[in-house]
Length: 111
Image (cartoon, rainbow, N blue to C red):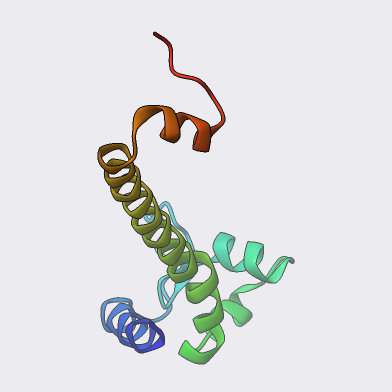
């Protein structure tokens, strides 16, 4: 999974430019795809233009991993886990008699 992270991060960098501060851009001051607001939230303090201009790929990499990659992995894990539980339940319902299944789950079936 780490190899995928490195590849994904490099792909992001290919599409995200350097420093911009276009007044028409609602994101405001941005460097390497990271807005000033997002960077301030990540570092836990206000930053100025000089600091935003100084951002490098190595500096923003932990932000991208924590704020985006790790969250996506959690979603993928959750989806895979849900699918596994659904498959397991389907097999269990077909193989185990209803009263045994009910006992496993801790309730009696309604008749």
